[in-house]
Image (tube, rainbow, N blue to C red; front, side):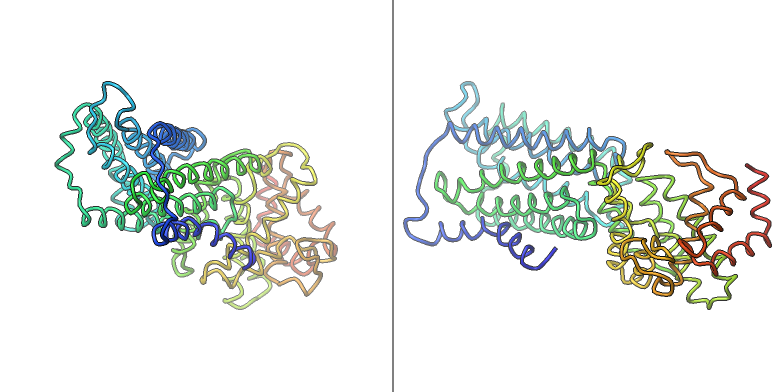
Length: 470
């Protein structure tokens, strides 16, 4: 994303606050518009959209119902239910509802606060004490939240006078507004980092939605009733959910799934925690890929093993061997951005689909560079599909231009791909696979690395063992 585009996006997201400041500080720029009917319909539309988002989260990512997605869905559902009481309590609109201003006044701010709290809990860094506690009590927490929200809806509709125990004053308003904005800002920052990592439209839509929700909170508390500064928050809530749904629609059209949406923050967490000195942290990073594709996770582990063996056979230094093994373990990490419909397609890929598949090597480089620990293997990840004789991707470099570690991984990657079952073909036995590797030695693969791999496998009896197993 270039700086001019980033600046434009920031300006659009900040525009509502600029408008609010102008309308509240320039005489005559905050006109009044008393329209209870419109208020009811706008609030109703907002609650329906929020409920739709919550439902979409639970249905579209049902196969990855992690604590994160459950809490995120619960936040939007809570906003829908609590904000609904704000609309239903519009004075004089619905007969039979006790017309108490407390329900109208309190429900608006409370709906965003509760929503922000659950969204905040959903983006706590994995592995932190708070995240572990939330994960441990997820069941009781969700149950208690449903009871509390349902109880509030009943009280707001049937016994609104009971809400008088909740204070209404400037100090309370300030505390509620600041805490809500702070939680939404933290969540927005977390989704921003995830978007910079993966580039998913759904992630950016969430960033935009959270920015609009945070600004809506300011307009809600500090706008003047029935004036433009007050109506602004209603428009921002609608805009937030329309933006989120639009972003998800783009993601669904591109990837035919919303599963990717739930994985980006998890990947960002594991990158933040990774340490070469801690093998478990690399394993966790691989498991973040396993959630998308079990084959890819297992494949990367085997490639790392083969690549390390080749590096030792070539008598490389310890530092280079470490680079080879680490790069081997995550060389396909860029596949997290490849739609499942492409990655696991049983038939021949179209030109467009193949372009998406090819992008995984450059995207993998970008992901590795986002981690200080893994930045040293980024170039290797980028180049592992380059061909020794040229015509590889993404850069078409040849021979010694390709990093030695990438040439080693290319041999290991090819061997494991040939000897593993894929959705589009059966596996080959070890001898047949190595015959194919020998055939492309010098054109696709580095002959020196191929010879080292053959020597390594023959000495350890791997070829014979695999041939016998086949």
